[in-house]
Image (cartoon, rainbow, N blue to C red; front, side, top):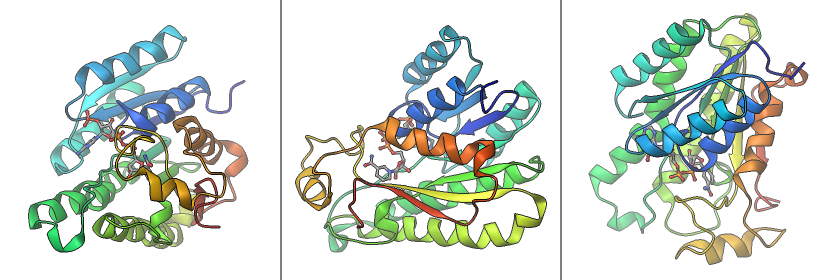
Length: 246
Ligand code: NDP
């Protein structure tokens, strides 16, 4: 039996990049999967089709992580469709790379609202339904712990907050048998952080492995943390960054 058979997962921001990779991997491991998106309805639909063609179950829900009602409704729709929620992956996130002194208030608000506030809201909504064995998984960042590249000051601050949210919440809900962990990717080749992009060179230079990672590298760790063998891991910040923070 696959490790996530009879489980349901919700992956926020699952239409592209790391979230799409996580959704496909959790489905391959047996979970029914809901993904959220904002603009990429076609991309989200193709993730669903790919999962269904492989024999899995998936739905896509339009839900902006900055919109509390939409996020809560996405959790409710996941449960209405699949009957339960076992794994929440708070993946939706964004960065607006630029020097901090040039960053506008609207840009600061956007990064905070998606990366941190959206994570709070989705987690609260999920916890209303999660049972013993549940998994809350954040997609933080290696820059939530150490900072070596310019242009990501506000972004790093939100990921540092996600790290402490993870640690605090793990203490608060451990007695319910629910684990809370933070997966911290390093440079992963996606639309947000293309390996050939303007901001890539210093990130690449900081890896020990001298290369960008792939979405599958992150998805594999998420799948392990979501699975039964990770039952005694909670409050942990697990970094998958090619040695960036070594
Ligand atoms: P991408 O920009 O490539 O993909 C983002 C995904 O999230 C898309 O599916 C997008 O769909 C969705 N999304 C964007 N904004 C929102 C929103 N407001 N509400 C709901 N969904 C949204 O990003 P990555 O895959 O690179 O990043 C995913 C996560 O991993 C983020 O939290 C990021 O901070 C983190 N991370 C990424 C790293 C990297 O190097 N790539 C490194 C460290 C951490 P749509 O366009 O339809 O909204």
